[in-house]
Amino acid sequence: MTAFEPEPHPQPQASAYPIDAGQAEELARLLQQDRLITEAMGGLFPEGQTLPEGGRLLDLACGPGGWACSVAFQYPHIEVIGVDINPSTVEYASTQAQARGLPNISFEIMDITQPLAFPDAFFDLINGRSLFSFMRPQDWRHLLAECRRLLKPGGIIRLTETEFGLTSSPATERYFALIAAALKRAGQSFSPDGRHVGITPVLPRLLRQAGFQDVHLRAGAVEWSSEAPMHYAFFKDLFVLFQLIQPFLLKTGVISREELEPLYQQAIAEAQADDFCAIWTWLTVWGHKADS
Image 1 (tube, helix red, strand yellow):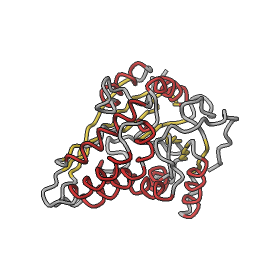
Image 2 (cartoon, rainbow, N blue to C red):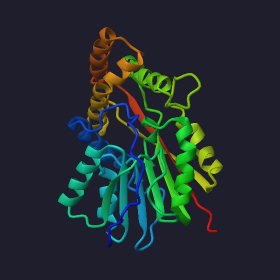
Image 3 (cartoon, helix red, strand yellow):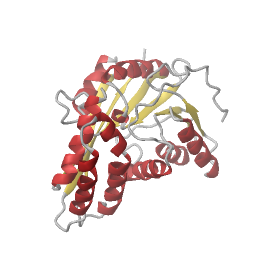
Image 4 (cartoon, rainbow, N blue to C red):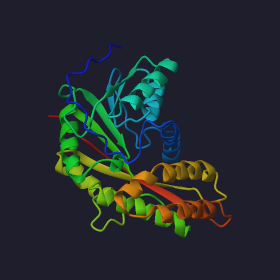
C-alpha cells in the first residue's frame, strides 16, 4: 500500500487541549483510555460500519494512535491515516505503529480546526473521539464541512462524544463540574451555563446542518462501581486525568490551589469506598455523504 504524501498544511496553532499531551503519563493514559472505550463500546465499529477493500480511513485528533493502530491491525486491507496537532504525540504514534509492524497506517501533524491537507473525496470513513476536549463551538461547523469535502460519495462520518459520567461521590461530581466550568470559561463548551460540556445534544443537528444524510445515534454506558469488573481501570484513568488537568483548572480560575489538592484526595478516597457507584456514558453519531 503506497504511503500518502500530504499537501502543504498551515502551521498548527497552539493546541487548546487542556493537558500537555506530550507527557508520558498522558500518552499512557490515552492509550489505556482507547482500549477501555473500545471494550466498553463493544468493538471498533459496534454500529456495523464496513470499509471496502483498499478503502481509506481518517482518524481525527488521533493522539498516540491507540484506536487507529487497532483498526489497522484488525483491517489490514485498508489504509489508515491519523492526524494530530502535537508533534511529539504523532512521533510516538508512528513509533508504535512501526514497532507493531503495521504497514497500512501513517500519522501526520495537522490541526483539525484548519483546512486538512488531503484531496477531495479521499476517505471512505472519518472517525473522531472526544473532540470536545479542545474544540470550540465555532470550530465544529468548519470541521464537519471539511469532513464532507474529504469523504467519498456515500462515505461515513463517525463521532463519539461524552458528557462525563455520574457517580455517588460528591468530590468526584464536583471535579466533573469544575472541568465543565473550566471548558466553558475557555470557550470550549456548548453548555449554556457551564454545568456540562453540551456537545451530545447538538451533535446530531451539527451533522445534519453540514449536509450529512441518514444521521443516526447510538448511546452506551458502562458501570465502574466499586465491585464492577471495570472499576479499577476506569478509576485509574479518571484520577490520572484529574491530576494532569489541575493546571488547566487553576489557569481558568474555577478553583484555588488551596482547595484543589484536598478535593482531589477526597475524590480518590470516595471512589475507592465499598459503596461507590458510577456509570460512564457516551454517544456515537454517524451519517453519510450523499452518493451524488
